[in-house]
Length: 205
Image (cartoon, rainbow, N blue to C red):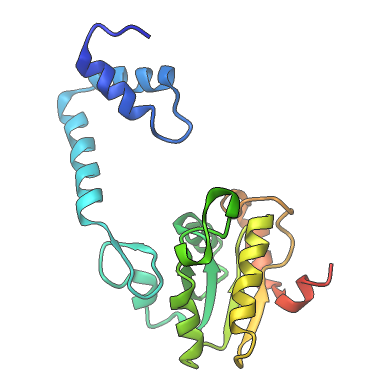
């Protein structure tokens, strides 16, 4: 792809590094930004700079937050004795959209995947185990994707905490095997949360 401007070429190269964005799509987006009023593009740029420089991760659940403690963890009306374990922020948003879960979350930041070089040490598993050890948690809900990596992560955590007096459940398999949680419709996901089952039962397959 030949460019008449080095500045344009650099912008397209940077844009094309985003997931799912090829060079042609990147070029179309960059040209769109050029054709918008300059003030709008500057607002977009400023919002991205603020995002990178000012975003926080909740010190309790590791969710993305504007503050040290996210709004969910800081809400006294949430059930602090029930923790839903998810992969990332998108899963928190998906479950929150169902309005069926009133507990707190623990964001792992991914799932165990040897093929991608992601091991337990790369995830927020130790802090989750510490929560269980504190004795303040009564139920842990596994809400990871119904994939081999998700099941592997569930089982790893289960082995780490099974000795403690805590109820361990997993969302019902209304979510098809192989599906990512964020793509499930709100009704199906909400029912999966409400009709969760003991995690041990999910091992008998």
